[in-house]
Length: 489
Ligand code: SF4
Picture 1 (cartoon, helix red, strand yellow):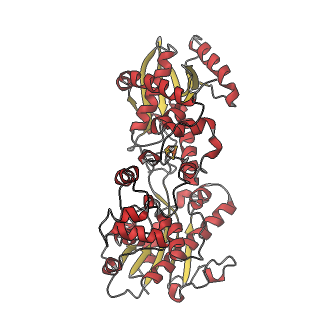
Picture 2: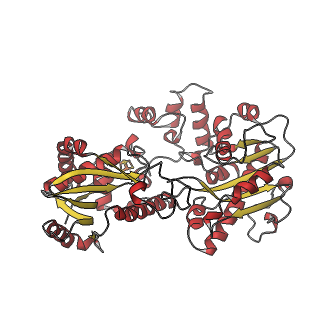
Picture 3: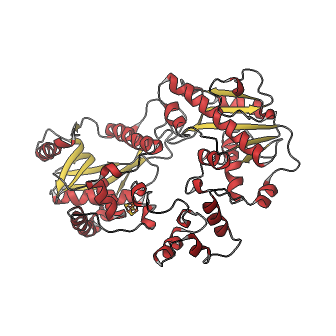
């Protein structure tokens, strides 16, 4: 049986303890977030589509991990079978390291290795992946003509059925992977030794816990750190935080001596200790419109960016508006009054928040441009549009020509940006400034749904999911309205 795989090797490069835990105590991993699961699924879907670039291949995927040895043997047999020209998920093992290569294509008397990525550009991690795969392929003495990474072509525009030859781009990384082979060999030996240890390596928490990826053993490794520790501030960079931590600064009182009084760093530590929030009200009020607009609407857009374009005229990851909820005084017709709903979440809905109009095209994404016409008409009734989104809503509205410029009668007021500019901080924000965290920070009694559920359920073919997604859009809008009115009452 193998000891390392592509994912455990990459994990080991980030932290030896993470590798050990993954191999010996995988049950201690943090729960995978819905976003992470969606990302994995997207990668799988693109990988399967990429097979059409080199069609007619044999799928070598094992049905279970116990099949790996059998598939390794079959893959090696196929290399010598002149009738096999393409293999998908070919399984190779060398020096206790197992890989599954997306595509292996016969190229004269050699083979072309292809690894597929569902992104628009290549990153260091992809190069590291490829270097490990080359190390194993070379160890198995597979004669390679080239090693290429395949990724999505940002300029591809769908016109009829997907043209995989245009959708994907190929980039040779042969020179890089050859140059990295010795480095990989060293690391494979080092990481195999880690897995063979009788106990977990002694690795203290550090910057590697968040970089390059948030580690999924933080729930385990960080459990001795008090929830109000200065390590959860975000006004101080990780390098500085851990430098202090390793130099014996292990309490908030000691850390407070290291930062200027009345500084943002000090305010955040105080917020941690009192489990309350900090906000620079002076900046907040300076950012708020004067005088207060009479006609305010709350807008929540659900955007969809499919890796593989779904609609003619669109590109990979091109943004579509899949649904929106608009809450405001002019939404009296065709509206859903949130206060009439049986699962009402907040009794103290602001009196002027009025009603909510919801539109979606979950069942037929080709109708998405209808949202543009509707929004142009509806937004024109309001002086101000309030939202909470990590995206720049003005840019989104401009991109879809819902507004022509930002000065035509209303203005976007994005609480996500405004609150960050006003240095909003609460312990629950830690490293994620989400609407769910914000709601819990401001309103103790408020337990918001899991926001990302919208993304999954809206893209499923499940009518119940659609209904839930619509409910979630409205509930988020209510939360934005409640937050806005709380801060600017
Ligand atoms: S949480 Fe940090 S120390 Fe623990 S395994 Fe992950 S990276 Fe390593």
